[in-house]
Length: 551
Image (tube, rainbow, N blue to C red):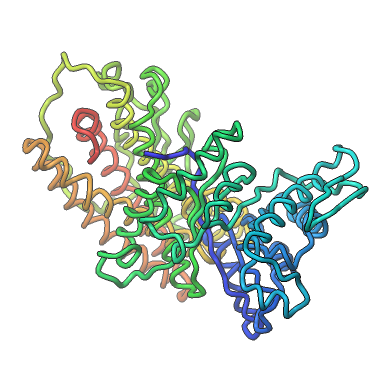
């Protein structure tokens, strides 16, 4: 297992077609609005059909707000390293620290020479790249004294360093052969291969070269982030890599992270629908699976993972004082619901010391008289063994379910707050967008309807992962849990129907004068059903997951 523990990043790899310039910029905006982390663009200055990459990245940085931008990868033979260093630093300063530097030795030697660049052999290109990295880092070291790099291919002698970037810009190398991989381990901040040239079977050996070189240079292998340019389809059978539904992508990318240490996935696609699905259906699932496995495999001491009584939530912030998330209603004419959704403190139900955390109780608050199911018919699982003790790893596995659910509760509260402010005119959609940028459920527009749509997709993804992975495991591991798991799966289907009601309400919201009434009725029903379901699931499954594992 080679998980280096890096925060996961996700992005896009766009084709800079000059005859579709507006579309390229629109796809970059979509990447930003969908909540992804990176926009990257290939760099082939000799290609007459392409926009200049650095100019394009500057425009993209200007019209986006959160995504990082990077060439994928910069063609160093055609971009003198001292000038490139200052271009990177300048854009990093102007964008508020949102630039990274993908860097390559430059292929297509004839094309490079045809546009006036040096004709280097493969070995010379590697040497020139290493010299170029020295120049770039020296230029960025604003207080480091006069730049003196006396290389065979790049000689910078007497230049003043600066400006310094706004943040520590990562240098990510596009590397495949041994010398380049060795350089990556010794000098780079990241490795940026493409699946088409470094397939799954090749990754272990390539990673091993990088790791060995890093250790030989006195570095940790974890100092080198592993990025991966990927492509796929959502319509395949699921047998091949990234050729199937979103759930297949989730499982395969999570496995790559945990087994090969890859931690950034950059989707090579110019299809806006693929970008939306990647952001809304794949990314949350990968984050969830990776977080679960990391928590289970490297849990801290039990007392550090416990959640003391009083920090449970109902659609609110964990660890906060009891608060109120108010429905937008101030009169029946606005909404049929005037009661708030209360953020209730957890109540001690016993058993917390052994499990290390408590399931979040249902505080009984309901916003609507409609009932999706009869809660009195819910089955219960086997009673826990009072003498059973749980290791830190087991406690972490059970606690992770609560953590995932708390994230859903927090974002549901945020959805309700933002919809309230947008629909009542207290906040225009452009301002609301700045708040939602910190959430995993961001999507491709600034309207209240899109906030809801994105959240619904995340809930569906979470339930799909449970239905396909967690529930079958629990049925096999302990047949006594079958009635509970069957009921939870039935509730997933019922919640899906509620989510479809939200979809219908969104249509009414944007097309009918009083559509906000239908939207709030649907959101209230979703709030009642989902929070009740999450509490029931935690009550029944936290202990079995701790005892049996999650898969």
